[in-house]
Length: 337
Image (cartoon, rainbow, N blue to C red; front, side, top):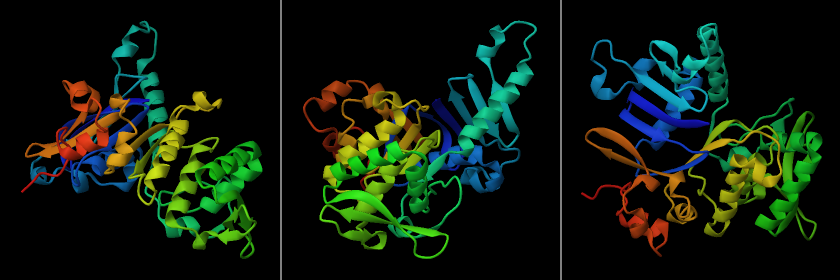
């Protein structure tokens, strides 16, 4: 698990640390660095897709020898640092292994393992039209960032993990009582499309389903995968979802993060989510350590864990957390002109 990420001269993240838990919900106004932090993590695992001149803080682009740095502190070493000088492993914990221990070799293994974890890092922002599309079938289907390939992932789950697929269908009926099962069709050779069956026996094609229904199905699919990405992000998971379903979305995310609570043997997933919804935020009132508030001022972006705010219990008391945040008392809201 990543404990924190320090950004230096990365776009609006001039000198700031993002604290993380197994689950972290980031709230803040538009332009407060929430998506930028996710882009930085994605960049660290996919270095070939970025150029440092494109991500250096705008006001520093004319400075010679400027350093752009993403320092990831996690529970294996003190930190793994990715910068325009390459990768480096800082290892206070490794110094106690004895004089014959090959620290350099261990550094290489740590960096390799960490890069593999970040390479699988996926930022999900679902597109209903992409979720509904028929897909060409390939082995080891994965769900793409916009939700593409959902039909392929679900069919693979049905064939390879039938118990998980049945559990997903049962949960689907609880979330959306109108439906009782995911079905599949073959629109043409080598392709699959998905349908939902109503309790009265009607088959509804994915293209005729509401956006919220498709988004809910995508969350459920990820929650029941046997090998989901080890680190992932949801951009505004409340988008298109009725407020009464947000608790179920939260529970699906927790299923990813805490598989041991659901009798699953896989490794936990570290999940980061961003939101503008006071309704979604309010679901985490009892877990202020999981909430991070993003601020932006003339010195750049700053992240602050809600549980670190002084007198936070006095702020909350009996009021809904979303209402308190929306009022502006906690910060992380647009500045008034």
